Length: 96
Image (cartoon, rainbow, N blue to C red; front, top):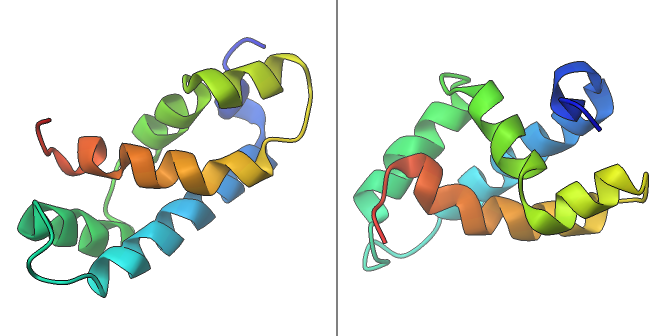
């Protein structure tokens, strides 16, 4: 597999798409949502294109499900939205 995210434009485009979709969802969530302020700040950075894309590619590629699909050269598209939503807080700097 190597650093799949470094040379696969389709993978990068799909990761970026899912993070934009997640950012849009965050922008419309209730202000009462846990860690809303941090999540909105990160969502704005994504929507303005001011975020670390390499960090995202690595985060997605190291998810066990995605990595398994990449190694087996299987479709991973259906898993990307789930990974985006589960990694969003981490990329927003929210502690568990």
